[in-house]
Image (cartoon, rainbow, N blue to C red; front, side, top):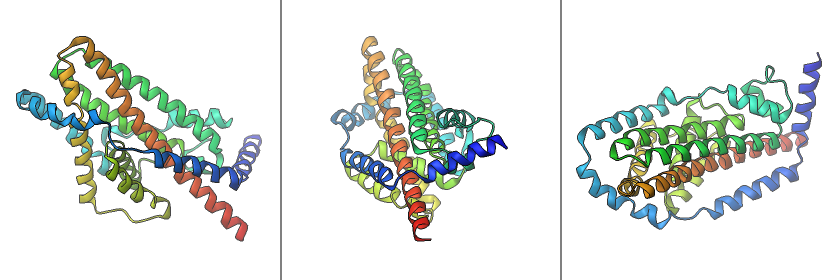
Length: 288
């Protein structure tokens, strides 16, 4: 009985998040969206050295990378090996919201967890993933092209897992196909130029309205674009691996910036959906 009362208090607190506070969160997100700029100059010309070095990359390495990326591509259909467990995220949310870990289920997060707890949880998870990406990038920056057979799939997988954690932190289930589509589009956003970012933002902005999923074929094509962009951006990493110290520094930087941008994109866009959902709930309760 005691725990039920505690959950009821949390529920009431969530429903009484002021409309002004939620509107403020939307303004913060809108400023972030407006600040999204074009790709950095070096990211754009990263395609040039990759195109040249790609010709001398051993065929076996191409096969390893291709096999790993095919497995990643299946994520949009089934989740594959990159579908994460929600226990860690739920434990974080329970701690921040002061709810017993054994009583919080994913389907209850949207009702029981305050937005402030969601924000704190997503910040901590993002920081942990970025630290891991930085360490991995520095490690593989020491080696030659064979280390990229490990690093490219690892970075893509880490990006997917980070985005899924952002989904879970705001009460959305990445086991649902529509959420996997949303996550793929977050990855596309993080690796797109300015025009691409604006197009994707427009597409993602209607998710809270329950818009129908796009055709599966177009989603797969979008995933292929993500893979191509990630692969192209490794051109400079390959080039700098010829210089040991530069390889370590650049490897750490590119992995850190990639996972940081994906995590931030998913964090902001999932937060936007949760804020809009709660605003709608407040307005509907006012009307009734």
